[in-house]
Image (cartoon, rainbow over all chains, first blue to last red; front, side, top):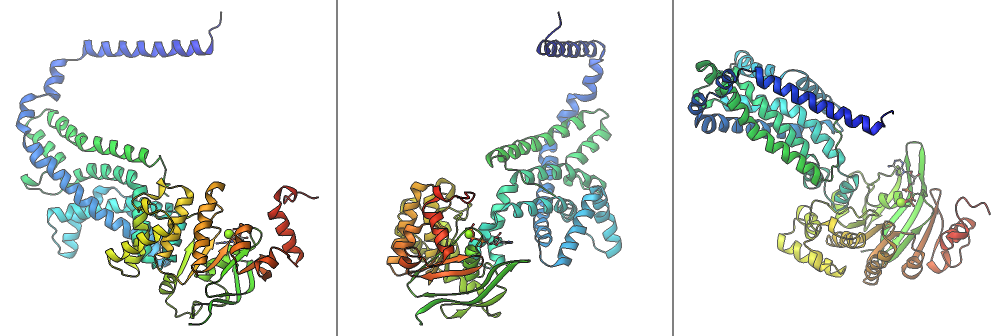
Length: 265
Length: 255
Ligand SMILES: Nc1ncnc2c1ncn2[C@@H]1O[C@H](COP(=O)(O)OP(=O)(O)OP(=O)(O)O)[C@@H](O)[C@H]1O
Ligand SMILES: [Mg+2]
């Protein structure tokens, strides 16, 4: 007797589960647990990392990310407005900027700011300015497109109502359009914040004093003194402490806005 | 001030190659209610939107309360504060509550103080019967309530003339009466009003003058009793027959 389609799907599912269990058993049986424990869960190394991994590294990651995000948001807004401008050269400049910085690795921007600019212009930025500029310059390229899409998603009638009440174009933009645009793009902006949190690790290429370490640099430093993967695991968890709630927040905001999607590009 | 509130002469407007307004003359006397009727696409909204320059006319002259809006040097933002506009789709600012909807332009444009702006706002909310909704968000209101808030928002700027573009077309039938009631009350108080509407009963009872538009021209105009009650032009007659008795004169009905 031939099996019905549904029955066959059921058998297929059971066989997959069985396969997974067998694979897990094989790994559990053959794995060298002691080896793994010392490689990933070296409790002494873990203990040595506290409290600095929190009070210095996590804190600095948050500060660097916040600085970069704030600058990137401001610059991104300017770029978005330029892209929507009626003045063609503004649109060109914004487009070139966005395509350029979205198209190159963020690491190059960090290198350029940390080593290229000081050489070329005899300018020396402190560490905070460097991170803020580098993260902001890269983040702005991404956020500009998001903000532009948000501004365009605000119904035209809102501007017409504002103009008919005597508001100038700029006034209507500031008091009516931009606040509504930001409500619409809060979920994608939160995602951008997650990306910047991770990109803040690129600061490792710059010479940092000990109290300027952020999570990745701190992890690598610990790693060089205690050769186990424990430090990497610990800082990885620290990143998740930041990024998981942000991801949750983003999805929550998206649900709350009725899943209204904004098209970027 | 003169007796004439809005004077439009030789108004032409086209979108690309589409000529929408082909030379219109409209005069609205101070304190009058002028209703504009006509089939869909005849240019009623475009005409209204030219009166506060939401659309830029291609030709002609528009003077509102002595200010020539078509003059290149006019301060259009200042002129618009004196011209209230009510839209078919309400267009309340969705991120602001009702009170803020009514105060934001008073504060930012007229530079009124917070206290004064709020007093004026509350007074106008009372006029439209929605004082208790001052702290609601627009999304929490029915369409009829939103439209009355939109009227109160326009009134809060102390306009000399009010423009209405099919203010009840987007409303459920049972909510139309509330909005028309507010407009009727405004008319009784002597507000100068230019109203695009399909509400023939309202036009008949409230309008001092009715303008019938078709194909970018004014086909017929005069007192409501004449234009609606006893139209002379065949096109007006046909339009009114269709509007007043829609079941017998559907657009695709060849009879
Ligand atoms: N911004 C625009 N760009 C191009 N064409 C337009 C624009 N606005 C209006 N039109 C066209 O102009 C014509 C007149 O439009 P308008 O909105 O003034 O008509 P209306 O009389 O208000 O019609 P309705 O009763 O359907 O509101 C229509 O053919 C419309 O498609
Ligand atoms: Mg219209």
